[in-house]
Image (cartoon, rainbow over all chains, first blue to last red; front, top):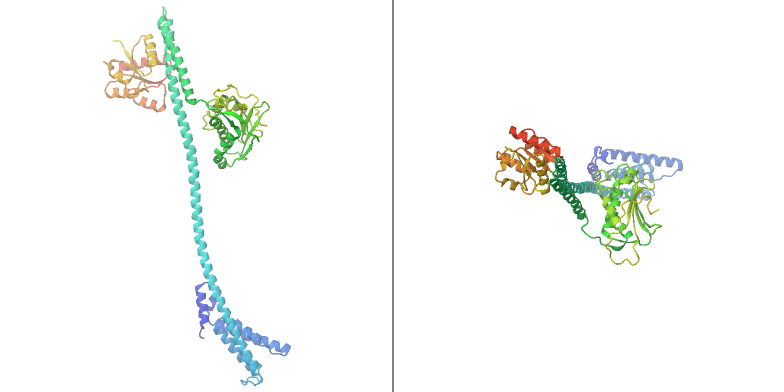
Length: 436
Length: 133
């Protein structure tokens, strides 16, 4: 049996989409015709059943058979039309098995053939449109799949690039921190070597002169002039060692302090801004309980910033240790009952034990691994030069609390001053802090 | 013949103090402010022992020792330093000095080292095993 164009189209379409619903049509071209015969047979059965029950002939089962067959292709549709026409003419148009059509039956027969032909045309048209739509949808779907795959590749590439960038940034941060630490250590090591050299020279002379002096005195009779000369050298070398220390101290105090009236809350804000990067990186929550009104002190803004930065940095480093879960930095400013201005920085790190609290302001004492122990001692000398005091205690719940008090600026304190204030060498004994 | 000890140190109080203590023990010592001054002296190689400061302007004590050794002038040498480092100690030992003494050192340490240097000078074996102070 020849295969119709429609069936060929279906076959070609099925060929282009392996696994699609029409593949069996291509593999078995006779199946549609077999189905067509089946449809018509079913229509005959249905019409016979209807006639038996209602005593009327209804042509609709045959239209349905034509429509269904046309869905399989124009060829099966035509076959169904012809078969239906033959069956209706021969069986339902009396006399039976006679090709003659009476004049009275002719209109209804013609109407049947026309309706069946229109059903065929409509079904074919629908089928063609459906196929065209399916093809378009398949093409669009294929396009979408391709575009999606390309997009996935691009997303993966971007993610990889982003991850690489993050890794680079992270490595860079580590390298920066390491470099800063190395430079700091190198500077300190160099400084320590220079100090050792400068101090050991007079010490060597003092030891040698002391020994010589003792020997001159032990002689019989004592060589008093030589002993006196050696003793004089010891005194001179002692002074020389003292001068070395004074020179080293002067290195750190080159600039006379510049004092102006400033709001300590501003200093706190500036330092928190400066530390924002580290705060974000460590996911630290910041709570700033600052006095609502400005707290004016007389001070060097840079030096006070340095003190504040040191306290905040210490707090952040204390919370950088592994095992610290809730990282919270609490900064408070307030006026205490004596009228002094208090600033405190509290962390939720591992805290300080009493021995650490008592030693924390000593030079070269550090609780941090790799710390050099100069930050707080420099902070303390700055605060004391401002007439204030630095203190430390344990935090309210955990961690450490470090802060300082400064005298309130007098109301007429617009003029710059150079006095270094009262130097208090001991930290506050109550360690309670001013900012409850 | 009197045994002469030459002291080379750029720090005047130190070299004078060393000269004073050595003289109080009966040694003869002369002093120089730099390696160059020592080399320009009339007879630098008549010393039986050298006490050289390591860190000096111009030629260092270790460089002077190496220079003298290369010139075939093997005088037992004691290096003294106000700023000792492990690296320098290693190089000093490798150069065959008698001792590497960090300042400040005790009278006894100085005397022991000087006597050892003078004894080694008698054996004429400057490449022997070095000791550190």
